[in-house]
Amino acid sequence: MGRVGDKAYECALKKDGCSEFNITGRTMKGFVFVSAEGTDMQEDLEYWVQLCLDYNPLVKKSKKQTNANTVYN
Image (tube, rainbow, N blue to C red; front, side):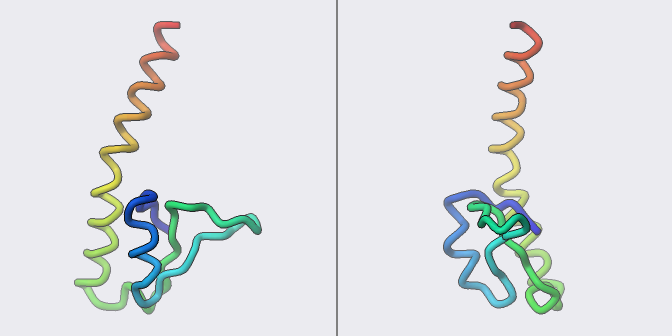
């Protein structure tokens, strides 16, 4: 499972071994599930890890803002 964000979501779903992440009966947009088929080659695994890392700075920024508001409010 990986969080790739809304912008990369549709493109990611077109890759082999990738599907919507649905664990609760409801699709979680921005999250994908990548099967073993999608990560069997080193370059494939590196692609998915990098895609998630590329989205990660956006998550960190929003969490810092939330934490700052919590501490000072």
